[in-house]
Image 1: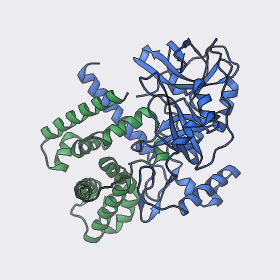
Image 2 (image 1 turned 135 degrees about the horizontal axis):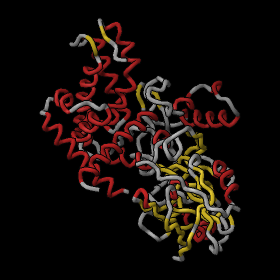
Image 3 (image 1 turned 90 degrees about the vertical axis):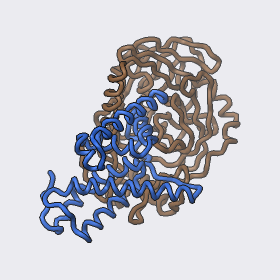
Image 4 (image 1 turned 30 degrees about the vertical axis):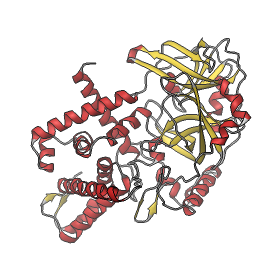
Length: 310
Length: 166
């Protein structure tokens, strides 16, 4: 790109980010969308329980309500509260992660089943990278946005440094899950955990950007939430169950697992918060179950559609 | 869309119509949602008490008042920061809200938040409110040439920051 093109591109990205951010920002007391259909879920968790439609929603709302009631507004790196008129909107306040979790035997055993994922999307001039994990024989689970638009050089590399060619055999841009078939990978699959609870220890495991060395970082489950948002292409509405976690998620971690102390998979790390380096977001094991099942025996390559916007 | 105001009795309606947008404006400029809400609250309170100096469309006046109050808030924050070791501003988006954005948009907003206040302010007015250079110049009391150069430098800094992170 020339300098001027790059500036124009940056201006367009900025406009796009403003539009999207304004769409999801719920301000004041008004739950009425002011721009487009992609307005938030945020307010509805604060409505009285009577508004809740299902048992799950009621349970989550109760957790959140209890959480808000029992918390203080003290500052700190993980306090995601804002207060105006004495009103708290969101809050996660769990103790700092316990680094001892990194030494549990479960973690040690799990590390070798986590891989680095690389691929090229020449149509949009991008090299994509992320993390993933073996969850079925020769099948690796990752985020769809880690392989979106990739048409060349899709590989996975193990912690030991062995690189294998891989093919995307399942692709779900709504949930943000993809499955890679990696013949000959031959690593024992990781298992999924049951539901984790706020306060539970966990580990963000994967490969950070531009690095082939495996990293594991202690984390702690903050909340279980349901988040409405667009799919990875910015369209439609997807309702996802997620964990909000306290733990440093780096670029490159996306698609990797959040591991329980026992070395099972609590969920798939898929995002981190703006301006809060200690906050990450994880699709729960429950949320990815259907996709994981659908891709576990798939061997026919599928399209990775196109690159994500931006 | 833009209400024509006669006396101040219509302020409630204006509040309904524009409060959320003005909070977004302030939150983007300040990089801090909580302070943004306070700023907008104060501006409305002031207009309610004292009335306002314009006939007709109140929105440009409110926007200018919000931008000015954001500046004062930033100055105050600098002072406070000098006196207090710990400072934890709330990000413009809550964690749940930012979970709904794609990673590249989060990166753009994070890079924006790291810019110096004046550049951030001009970029927000230019690309969020989509005001013209002349309108921004009038609002901030600077020359259109300065708006242009500040915009260009701001975008270049943003492009550099994004290159480093992506």
